[in-house]
Image 1: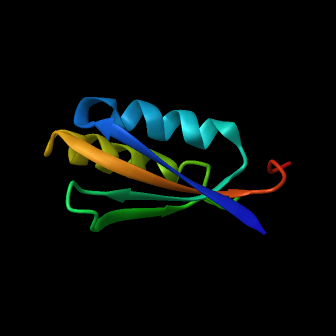
Image 2 (image 1 turned 120 degrees about the vertical axis):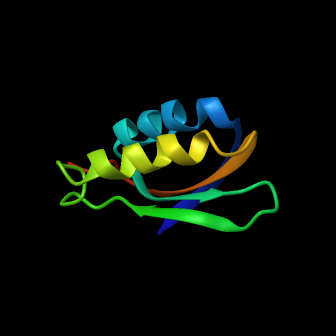
Amino acid sequence: MGTKSEFKVKGEELLKKIKELIHEGNVRRIIIKNEEGKSILEIPLTLGVIGAVIAPVLAAVGAIGALATSYSIEVERTDQPDE
């Protein structure tokens, strides 16, 4: 079972926060929502995804961050960090 949390960030902080969350290791899924609360990008973070596949996702997150002034990030965490 996991826990959920939500963060509010400004557009220019979006990419930095996503990178921080990925490096924490216990994040299972990240959902980026616009100002209206609609999901615009969902990033499943399984062990197999965190390799070279994540680079294009981070590029997309950077582009999304430039489009609006604020976002919310919903984070689904596992109880244990990935090993």
